[in-house]
Length: 385
Image (cartoon, rainbow, N blue to C red; front, top):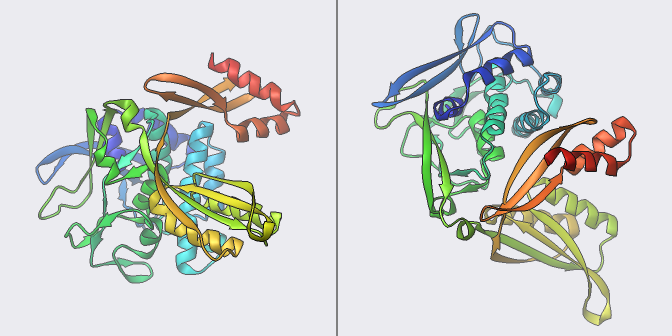
């Protein structure tokens, strides 16, 4: 449904066809057709294997792969560096959820559902679509998950299914008053990884709709169209709409090692913190200490606060919700004589704040090519001119 909406919004079908070829998905074809659901017209996108539709739960003839196999397919595909990175992140996040739900190691997860050909197309295709449209920010309404139960390879499960529920932690959801599964793990991971902001703040941003696309599901629902709508919009009063709420978590420590603080900062960033930093402070009885500050989206603040206490041993932390002015950000890939480098661009009210090559890309190329870091950095900056 997501790719159907992207195609309706203007994503060239040829990009997905080229992606399938680059991934080496043999016997896989794509079908794009105009259709209706509940009287609403849109695009029905489906994946065929040997001429037969392959749905999200896989089919008897579909390949089932481990995470390392899928990541290797993506890495060796020849797709752009940014698409490879984003698609790999989607599959890693999905694999981690499945592993946690089933209590097994990451490499023990059998991708019966997520490793089937259609799910590879869905997730890598989502990365291709985001690269094509290049949105500054992605908003989403509350996610409708459905209700009741769903039959899986592991038996009857409640809706949302366990992996879906795990992936949607901290994200606003509703049953929508609909019986059945309306959000799958594949859909949930797209929402988890690609969306920057959810309702109610998402709907509070004044914007002008430029175009929209409708992606249709395979089922007919009795009381509403089974459809996903994507809108391409330009914020009005851009400077005002660049204010966003963030949670500030703070605590002081005077009995924790530097190594433990560094590890805590690393795990907090991996868990979704926007930033983590420390400040030297003088505590009671003139003891030297460290104040640790964590910035996060409000919906993640409770989870991150608990992690902060667990990792540092602090007996409590403070939370303050503040407004933060955020520049519009985008990432593009430039080709230098030394290789591809992602470059971040920032702007406010349409005025550029400058560009900066992605550190990880510069470091990787510098090590691979055996050249100074600054040479790669400068080459990337020149390529943006």
